[in-house]
Length: 111
Length: 117
Image (spheres, each protein chain N blue to C red):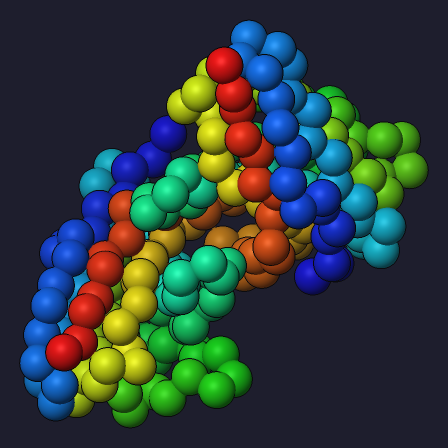
């Protein structure tokens, strides 16, 4: 699986949009971009994923650049409960396909 | 989204004993489940891939005789830590894959915190 690069930490004021970047310059054509987050002492939570088109769901939006070498996860109105470590992972399709977790971005949402 | 449960949520055991952790997919069937381990202030590390009806596939450096995995049904995988030692104390997390056709997504359980005394 391609390696991803994320900033180690970010801060965001509550109510503001949180934009979390991820670089995946060696991504292959058949690899998807997945985002998960892990709140302290809990299992990771799936947020969103995409292949090449921008995606939006009730939790977040995923913007993937046209060359697919980077992406941005957007939490439109961050709350204190969004404080977590966010992981950007690239992965090929398939039920047996593994997820390889990097160090992620620790997002701290403040009042 | 799909729900994955784990039991127990935390366990304390004496050194040398064995501990079994259950992972269940509650509202979907999963031919493949995964087991991860997470030490404090570190990221998740994949231990093994659990395949329904066949042997698990272990990652390099993970002792298959120490971490026994059984995936007897499409909704249940178990991880048994045999002869546990203090260095096995960790946060163990399972996941199960739902969906198909390029939309496969892994959903994670809440984790099991193991403390070996």
